[in-house]
Length: 377
Image 1 (cartoon, rainbow, N blue to C red):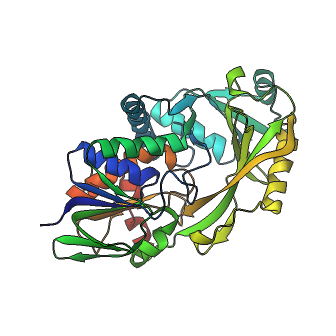
Image 2 (cartoon, one colour):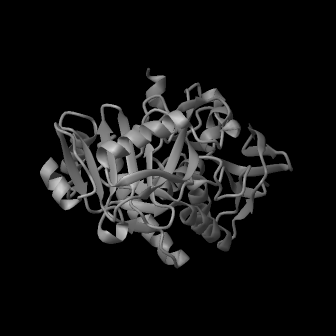
């Protein structure tokens, strides 16, 4: 008989959520990670991650993110500490671009409250921001940010409290199906389970190479800057923000501590063949792009760099998630290719991952994220 009901490969945002979900269901769970999460080697660090409801990328994400709000609130209560801060979100772009029409379409489809704002209204309401001619904005009050390390730590703590075994600093070398058993080999041992849940983040391409779906890793620097004025404090009502500009898509978070205001480019990113070789050095060309954005749109900010950290996006071919069963491995499921916008939905993706690995299906509305869309060409 296998030692575990479920092995979770990777204990970042989604893997820690899956371990917690499986342990909540009373399963014998083993979580494996090559590092010691929460860590800064992948996609789930950098202090904050945005959470929003009016999903411009695809309106079908909205039911998932609404459920995620509920699951984060449940986790806050279980952990006894704050994980989410509601600051609101200001999104600005061309009236015929991707972001503003996408927000408005998702809001209309799911009856979400967003305010449409003219450039003058934006600058009166949020004096630290400037809106170029020809752009418009939307403001979503029920948006803000998650404290990323706290969230992962809370999921792992709650999983362990319910009996999950967590083995960190242990790299997975291979996995295979042996009859009704899934076998996972690491650099420290061999483990067997009835099912496997894969949430390998930037290492997904190697772990899931037989899917024949290209998962490209991009290095995405994050920066924190010192403000020159008092217009950017969360305590004074400054929201999170996202701009779609002719130079790219940029986002950021208001000042919530001594590290200053966070800002980064969501578009672009340098390709990375090996996630283990991500440089910790400042990318001067990338930094210059972010500094130009700040000078044009947040004129009260300085270019004094307080801190920086690289993040890794794992991009699917269409920048939407992959959530599915493995077609050649019974009782094996995976979440991959979160493409830089998956953290907010992590608790629900963990739930779906456990459903798929154990039951082969999920009642959650995840059909649009199936890997079969690529098999169809």
